[in-house]
Amino acid sequence: MNTALVTGGSGSIGFAISDQLASDGFDVILLGRSADPLDSVKSKLQAEHPGRSITVEICDVRHPHAVRELFESLTSRDIELDILVNCAGISGGGYTAEISDELWDDVIATNLNGTFYVIRDLLRFSRMGEGGRIINIASTGGKQGVIHAVPYSASKHGVVGLTKALGLELARNGSGITVNAVCPGFVESDMAERVREHYASIWGTTVDEARRRIEERVPLGRYIAPDEVAAMVSYLASPRAAGVTAQALNVCGGLGNY
Image (cartoon, rainbow, N blue to C red; front, side, top):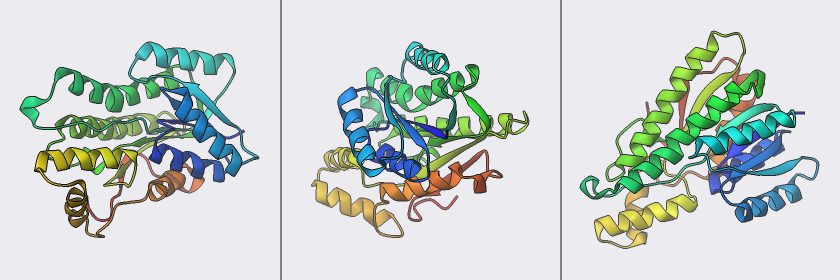
């Protein structure tokens, strides 16, 4: 049985990734903080992929004890993962002098610490077999600074660094496990709506104008679709990507070319 676990499974990108992996033949475990949105995604995926097992696990990845309990449960049920996609993430920023301790801590805890806790316990509990794939959803904001988004950019830089270091570590242990990051640019998602509102407030303009300015920055002149991010995940999860590890690959419409 091929099994993928997707954290942040109820978000726009998490759903697109889960949908793609189910199409690729994986049973999917959706992970998130709240049952209702996960159950909604589960129902949609079951309708689209009647032959696949779609299950839900409730876990707040910000808390190491919650992640540990998750992997204790997976271990007790002898569930082994072929694919782990760390997609749980939140936006966050503003004028740096005005950023609260609470906002900083929440963004770092969700985007960076949560990714680390899940990977650490995946390895600690030996829940991934030979040739598995760890795929972290980072951001082009993890390669360059993003104005008025210090917490977010810092957290995603951390995810990119974690990916590269762990990829090198696991490359030499004979497991065949690869570790890569996908770095989306501006993706049309539920988070994108909040980001446009955030920038409209900072710039003193309308949400529509904020969208225009953002799209103007992208060489392709548009937002990336969630299924375009999922396509890169699908490639990295496939046998064809066995030689790709410790990389951070952009899906950004040319926003970043590094």
